[in-house]
Image (cartoon, rainbow, N blue to C red):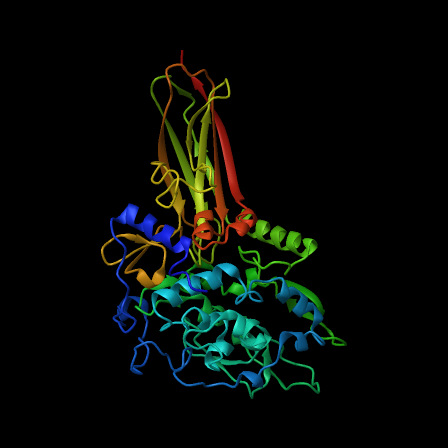
Length: 471
């Protein structure tokens, strides 16, 4: 997919120009300057273009694609795990239309020189076998590469070298590795118990991401490493792979199993991938996860005066003890406060965090009301380029600024709500802490408008109160 000359690309350039007065210069893919003291990032080995990494983005193939097994083969003995995995975004890691479109932007902007960057985690097997090569097309890749984070992508890992950018070793000739100390012998594969599959570092090896430039992009493992959950020896798997009891394989004994649905905040956006029942189940799991992740509390005075300002104090708390709220791809996640004030006649006298007619927040990226919400309170992050101009894409970014809430931390903001002279009391004030995984404007820019209706907003928490108007 090449977006360099599409209408979406033209809209993006126009939008950037309108807000920045210039388009960012194309980055130099050979530039690997980093702040190693701050990020712990080691630049790739110098193989002539400054991009290849001997572990995760090798200049020459280090694996044979055909030494690995399809998840469909694993399903014959592990049907429960397979059925769970199929509903996860691990299974659609290479099929997801947003991911494919974003890779297409990077391909077009960098002339294919960094085509293994995003795919090094989404299909480590495909990258290390060189099925994924510069200028690749998704529809020409091997079916095993397209399985993304498939069974062998995790259970053939032999060790963790680093906790970012696919920092794990894959061993196609080794045993299948799992958490059970007494794996059952079988005729299909050898088995080996390992501890690291149950540890956060295993997840961190792909879920923490550092740009080629050395700029940290996604940091859930780094956040966990200084969190209360880490101090209590609780790992990513404890929340995102909840336990049940049953056989791990057909005919096997009952064991403590970990769900392979890998619940997070995304629904697979692939047509006909999930049936209605599966989709409802995934959405219910996401809703349960999100509604336990934060709280919001209003603090209002008992009375206010028409023609004056009402001070609305709101405290937001991250109830997650393991990572920030939000985490992961915070530069495209949307987490925000919606606040409305209504008088006794039902007239809305104040609103922030409401959406424009396109369904977008009225922030810098709104096509209809850019910068139209001066009081908007968001949690997340954003990129700017070398000139200090906002950009949507990490390969243009020179700074990444976050205001996400740390684990179990809270933040208090005060909004100054003007009360019209003619307002009739009492004033009803309501607030919601809202979340959605992707913004509509991004899908429109990527020409994925059909998926906008799938962007469900979850209300993490809400609060409301009443203020009397003084005579």
